[in-house]
Image (cartoon, rainbow, N blue to C red; front, side):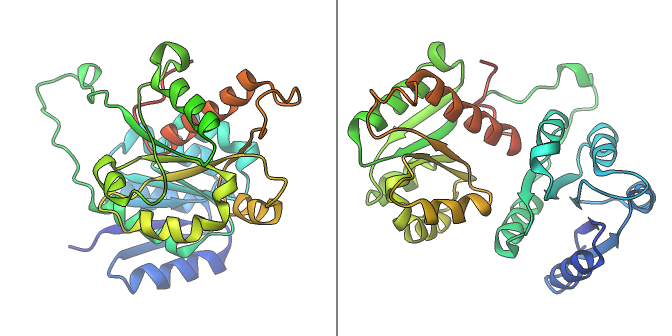
Length: 280
C-alpha cells in the first residue's frame, strides 16, 4: 500500500510542485494551503508523513506540529520553513523528524522522506504504560575532519569527555581519504574544518554513498579565505561556527567558541532525534 504524505504550505506553487514530484514516486499525496484543512486531513487519514510549513493561514504550523506530536506520534513530520530564526527554538522544543530551510533542495528533501518512510516503527507492548517506555541511550557518532592537528585534537578531546560537554558522544578524528574507516565508524554528524570547504562537494558525494550517510555537516573555522563558498553553504542551511586559526586570538575566546559548536551539535541531535545531546 502506498505511503500517505500530507503537504501543507501556504504557497500553492509549492504544494503543486511537491505533489507532482512525490506522486510520481508512488506516494499517496494529500495537499492543502491552510492549517484548518490540514487538521481535517490529519484526523481523517492515517498519514505516514507530513511536510509542514510553519506560517499558515487559519491554524499555524506550530499548533499543527504540537497536535501531531501529541496525538499522532507515529506520523513523521518534516518542517520546511523560511522563518527559522523566529520559530526554530519553538519547533525544537516540540520535536520533529527533519528540518529544512527554504528554498528547498529537492534532492535533500527526497532523501529525508525516503529515509524516514523506510524506517520500521517498533511495536509498543500494550501492557507497558507510556511513562516507562524508553529508548536505549546510545552514543551519537561524531567525525572531526580538520587539517589542523591542534584544533581537531581540541574538538575531539572536548566531545569525548562527558564531564566536559555533558553529552553522550563517540568521536573519531580522521582525514577525508580514510574511506574504509568512515564506513566502519558510520558517523551521525560531521564537524568539518572550513579550510576543507573546497573539497566538500566531492567528500559529501562520497559520504552520501555510505551505507549509513551522516545526517548533517557542521562547518567550523576561519572563513576569511573562502567566505564566498562558506556563505553559499550557509544559505543552503549548513551551520557555520567561527573559530580562529590561532587559539590565542582574543577575539574568539576558545571556551565560548567550543560552546557555540556544541550548541550547534545539540541542535542537530534534536533535529534528527539523536540521543547524544544531553543538557549542558
